[in-house]
Image (tube, rainbow, N blue to C red; front, side, top):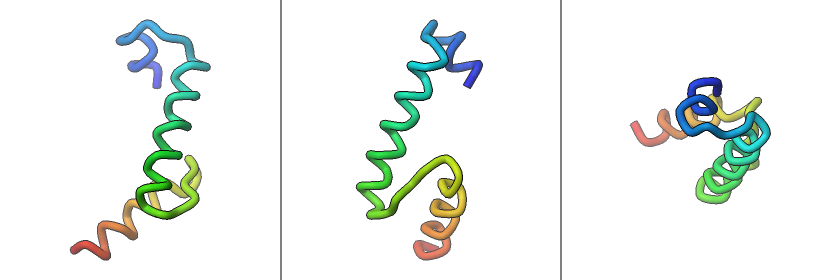
Amino acid sequence: MILVIKEYQCTRGHTKDEAYAILEILGEALREDLNKSNFRASVENLIKIII
């Protein structure tokens, strides 16, 4: 996250807000309730289904 903050010169709060928005969009697309705690497991499960 620090790299994003430095690269785009935005605040930590803004970065967290945008990350949350991305999780919401992905969750809707995958029809899952995504959050930072279950993101990795959800993506790994999706990959297993695809492969």
